Image (tube, rainbow, N blue to C red; front, top):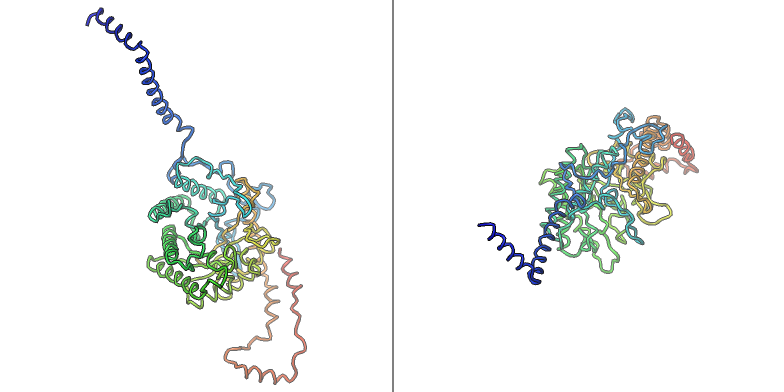
Length: 502
């Protein structure tokens, strides 16, 4: 093509696209190309601004949610550092009547996923107040959000120096859309896989797992006690999957908390049927554990009310009676201190009652507000109370498999900083460490034990075994005169002795 023909071709082309209709078409094509280029640029460069981190265990892109928080170490009572322990020295050896263990082995602290990572600050009168970074960080979907939370949990355990953790199934993995059972199972399996990787990388361990059988509307009439067979079967499926999850993660225990296992009125309730069904669920869980080779500890956690108006496992006494009646020999009791006070008992009373029946398995360490009649789940920071609790625990020789001091405790609604999570756990861990050492000193000294023993010395060498009521009455008649008084209990002396250690 010569120069002249090229000039003519370009002139015709220019003339063609210079017409109004062709100009509009050309501008439209240019606009489409510009829009497409813009989208491509947004995808290419905008991801830096709207990046969603893949928070798998192997990912280095997961945010460090506690970057500004130092590792919490033991610094002793003279430190002014609020991010340090004054009394909890994890590797300090404490001896009790010749049995010596490290503090971490006596106390076996555990962090609760539901309050620490999922706690929102919601109460019956107000919306959530917490804006945790793992909840506000960008996430593409609910599973990415779950991964952010899981990584936050293990970052927290690492910074705080706690060895154990606990969870409900729905804490760590969302239910499938519309209740889809297969999606629900896939979600839980994925999160268990991530948790297992994080455990292996960090050395952290699962104290116990449980299924959330109370939050969903399907459980409004109970789970194991529901009058609806489909709901009962759904609960059984959740328990099976939570047991599978616990076994996969090496969990030492499994807890049943029956918040909805109760009733509002007996007018529409068959209590006998409901209790039989609940026992059947527990037996099925025990049988399944045997089938999969999980030899952990099953635990029942009593509570008198809330959310149920009348909860079947009201207190340790009711739970122990239920276990005996239904021959559930593999079960022990997880005592929560705030539940104890709601039932009208002290936490030490409930621990001691469980211990004397060889049923004390684990402790949810918290306290209630004495001016409030509901479950406030506050962090226990009181030294005398911590000492009373540790006296009971040390009397039984500490925890066995599946037991620990789990912080089933939450920040106050008004405490909204990430730092507050650390302050609360540090203060309670220090209180329990002080309680451990004070209780050890009391038992090693023996003065309180001697006072208690002397009260019962009239029974030394005397056995009630095999003595009939007639035998006992005959012995009484042989005394000729009924006792007019008995020895002082010296309660104030006991309290004075106790106070010298705390």
